[in-house]
Image 1 (cartoon, one colour):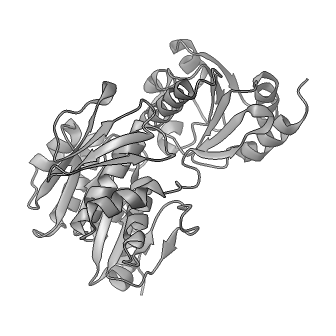
Image 2 (tube, rainbow, N blue to C red):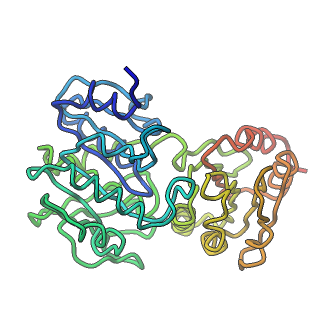
Length: 379
């Protein structure tokens, strides 16, 4: 039989199981990883398929031994012979829609086309399921207005500039970096959480994961306890090392919103620990949407939290990053050679600085090359 991967998954592994799907433009990998870990800690032996490697598991997929299966639900097209979004195959009973923005410009002409795919996904969620969404996001509300036949619960962050007001599930920030927060369930019960993850986006991810797990029968207090031991996902703000007192992170961010939220989280954390070092970003615009120039107008604003930005101009990018540098207020430069870029960063980085490398690809192996250069004695 000639089948796509999503169709095979649905027929061979998901049939008859309780599917919990994490969807949205950003955070799918992290939410699905958190959710799988919560279910694992609850003794439910979930299967999962995740577009990254959760540190708690060390693998990106397994069949699992229980009735639950967690899947990262991607809106990218299924195959060259099936142009529907992958996620319409999965039939989730629990659905998280984390956020909704324009992306995948090589597949979809505009946001409305993506919203139509999410509408198709909503039609696949049964009446005894649950749809979890952030409160008050216009693109999501417009999609739900096309038709939603499943009970819905909303998620909201409270405190700081990201205050979203009321929500069935609420996360109140107790520090600016998002490492200490309080979760409030629809019942009114509150649970305080300290963890090592940074950024408001991860607080939102954690809130969604707990709400999804609760729908599957996991006690909220147990879910929060499991989150405290969640060790993150490879390449999602992963600390690679601290040579010469310079913290070097690897991050998968490849969209202006993801770049902005990651940098904001690092900036808030840097202020909290009193290190006083600079935040330096190395960014490769590698995704198809980035290479097409769809987001170039937003890139300058996305790096506002950084003190210094190095942009990498890869071969085949037919528009110049110089216009991004010119449009921004942050000190920045454009480089077309990896060796030159590594040498420049290694020469400038000082003890206490934080360097974050952002790309959804290998970035020419820059990660290990920069670590090696920083291990050499400073000039």
